[in-house]
Length: 174
Image (cartoon, rainbow, N blue to C red):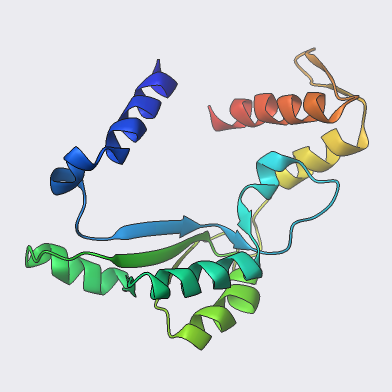
């Protein structure tokens, strides 16, 4: 039911009749990683990445289309003053992966693009357990996964591996 509602709201958002009510301030683009895609990895984790080429192309196309990149502070000011604003993009990066600095930052600097990184506190503390990569490695390297609960997952084919990853990830997210 939740998914159906989300799809319906997404559909409504694409109808131009709703633009006067739900658009006009900015588009917020939320990224996680800017890093090359890796062979042999699962789509569910790889989908959290964009390549540096994609990011640069997105920036160039947005500039060509007349969009202005804006900081979160500037967007806050626009919202506080209830100013009408169109064609603005805010970029945020979640988690604070090293590639945000090593790969994304030089691109943002080149185009003078403001951005915001939300750093997960356990990253700089070096206490983070990136369990989703651990689970992915276990699934990719094995044809069967057995949990301590007794559940057994077949991981013989890539589709099985993807399904298993999503099911196990869901258990961690509860």
